[in-house]
Image (cartoon, rainbow, N blue to C red; front, side, top):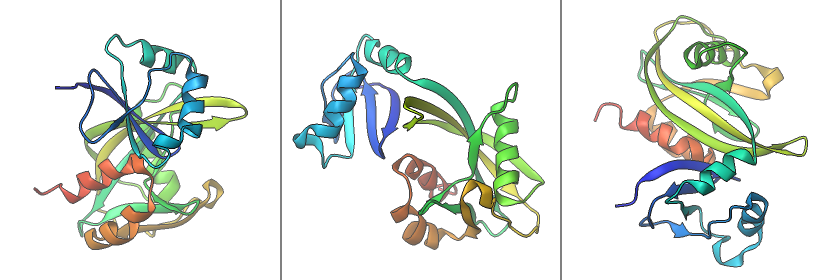
Length: 206
């Protein structure tokens, strides 16, 4: 059975880094020259419609080269559920998103996650229940490729404060969204990297 080392999202496509071919994933070549890897993803016609790709990396050399080719940023965010069992979501840059942001110097992921939820949504008195997972995605910034690692925490909120979107961070709306709306409104219009977190919310009581 293939072991998955890491899962990275590149241009909203899932790249699984594994020890052996993975069912339901399209295997792509293992380029140790990461510039060539990006070029392959962008230009190869045979995979353009494939959203789930896999790189077989038994010796770990691809992941080592991939990390070396990027600037590293760490972030943290929250999967926040209120007393009505609804999920806190934000609308930013045309997508439904979850509150998150970069760690400040010397800050732990837990503290950063709480701070980012407070700043982006205007609420306080949050409680972390547990750490959920970590996600990776890449983007370009000032001509450099960035690999962002985000720590995610399950939180509860028992307050009644008015939600205030942090507009300077391009957040247009903040709301607690009930389960049915999460499935029909948020999940069809979000980032692929967030779908496991939305599914964790949907499966929370099962």
